Length: 541
Image (cartoon, rainbow, N blue to C red; front, top):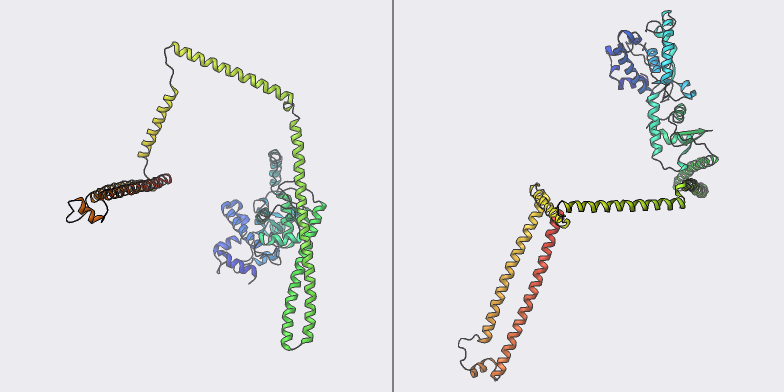
């Protein structure tokens, strides 16, 4: 089984064994169905179009590795031969239909034509062709000199008429779109827009057909499509340059110099890779020879390795120098474009400033007229306002207080906001803010109660201390000043003892007052913190 047969049997259910009746119908002379069974004819044409496109794209044509060009030869017809079915008899009719619909374009016509494959004649031209050509075509068909009803020529005659090489339009368009998209994602530097054929192939081959190798003919067809039909490249003497769509740009000597430097860099890269490979091989060889005891031969390989390392250093230096020069060239080209933009901008601005309306005298006159017009308008507005006030006064209408109206409007707005807030369904954030607010209020009330209790307790303790100072806590307090003096202060006199009690009482009161002040300050700080937390929760909601 050939490579094409294996591909068909694995990709298309019609090529099963034994072949279904569907395949026998497809392999028959389908040109006879064009008038008798138009729907069946279009279905067969669609199936063969997909099949031939798949064969070409996969590179399964006999004696050809092209992926964009169909070679409709006797070898292809023979390779399509299937057991118990034979060769396809309708290939000629298929090629005729593909050509008429421009789905397949003869290779010679595609490469030599200067007209885009998307070109369509004007409506007037098509109308004239139809009006003049249709009667002539009908007359010739009556004489059997023109026209085709599917029976006038045989399938073999039609095959001989239409067999040849064809560019598959859908495959070329797909490849062109992929190449343009890849180039669009690259930097806009001039060095990234220049290629030769070899560099173009290595850059876009994997992008256009992943896993496949484009032939020289495929590259030629793709470049022709990009240049003539998509107008995104210019080609001159083997130099390919990507340009903006439909931009007229020539390939300059600077472009040639840049491309030559890129080609030199590519060769340097290849040389560096080869030198590194040879150094690796010699290192491994030296180890093997030393293991075998061949020191003399190992010394020879070591000397060769040193020479290669010296050459590698030189090549790396040359590569770095060329890369630096390329960067400077790219910067200089950008500077030229910037200066061109500056020059154009300066000329444009100068031309605009030469307009008569932008002259100093004209500007002064215009602004003076504008001032006069505004002053007249202001006088008219003032006169209208006075007239309105007089009319309202004559009608007994009191002037409206704007401040009062604004206050009433603000109150209505606040009332409406409050009603909207009540009607609006509460979200999770609203619920969270409400819970936070309630928690802050509860904590504030609890803290207030605790402060009141603490204050009451402090007052009670203060009263107890005062009573203690006034009547010391003893089971049997002394009944005379002498006995009280002997118990509390020993030999201290009653006047001194009274002074001590007064100082102690005042000190206690001062400490209690200071503590009350500190408690109040702590309470205020706590309340401020709770208010801040509540406001933040409401703001987040």
